[in-house]
Structure formats: C-alpha cells, structure tokens
Image: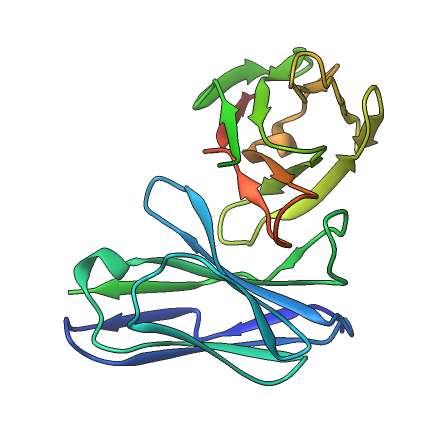
Length: 113
Length: 113
C-alpha cells in the first residue's frame, strides 16, 4: 500500500515533556511537510523538506524541530510542550513544486494537560 | 503575505441542492489554486487544482474556475449528496515563494438527507 503513515494516532502528555511524532511515506516523493491544525481546523505549514534539506521553516517556536533520516521519513520533535501545542499534526508529501498535489497522513492528535 | 479567504464557516444544505463555497485569494505573482476535502479522522485530500486564468478544475462533480480579475476560485456542485459532508479547504501555492500551501479557514459542509 502506498500512502503517508503517521504514528502515534494520539498522544497525551504533560506540560514540559518532550514528544516525538513519526511520518513515513511510501509514494516515492522527495518533498515532505508538517502542518499544524488547531482546534478551529485552521491549517498552517510548519516545515517542509526536500531530499533531506529544510526549505521552509515558518516562524514556529524553537522547541519544534523536524528530523529527517531519508526522503521517505520526516519526524517532528517537540521539546518541552506547552498547552498551546495541543493540536493535530499532519504530515504530507509531494513531488515538490508549486503545482504538485500534496498527500496527507491521518494526523497525530496531541493533547497537552 | 499570501492569504485565502473563505467566507462561509459552515454551509447546511439538503440532498440535491446546489452548492457554492466562496474562495478569494491575495498573493503576489500567479498562484496555483487548490481545493482539498477533509473527512472526520482523516487528513485533507486533494480535490483538484487550476494554475492559470479561466482554467476550470473539476473532480467528483465539484468544479471551480480560476478568475484572476476577481481573485476568486469558488467551489460549486450541482447536486450534493449526504456523502459530501466534510470540511472543504481552498488553498494556494504562490509561484513566487517557497513550496508550501496557504490554506483558507475551511468550510464545514453539512448535508441533511
């Protein structure tokens, strides 16, 4: 099956903890993205990677860091989570370029208590 | 910066009604325009795109026409079904900027049988 896979589906943690989310795509794409979807369903780009190189880094807090081991994997680490980090984190991939459709994973829902 | 405005936060219709969801954009250059659909518990799915003035994109009975003069890309469907209930996002990718999607706030479509 070719798709975008994310783990875990859900994660509940306490303020100040560190969390890490995984994303893998089997579509052969060379560009991957992380988006944040808040409680109002607003979607905002956080990072994108092309062939393991960071090409977009929106003004997200420094406690967020993307990690890529190869073009099929893009993980997201959050050091010392805050309550406002509660959201759904969506991973996506594409062939890159402005006209390419992006394929999204199902998301990881983070709840910070 | 780039922005996408979706006027309707929620649209409620009956089956076989005509649907219009309004989308206007602001961007430098000549952006590519997209519609994505998100079902509960899933990531957004690409519906279709258009990349030049007067181009019509379409899929699954939905369509939209790129209107550069009006800076619009309104989504329409002639006869909605209950299975169309979802959140619809208009998005743009600015060819003059980095490879990323800028999304509108989304429109919740509710179809009553």
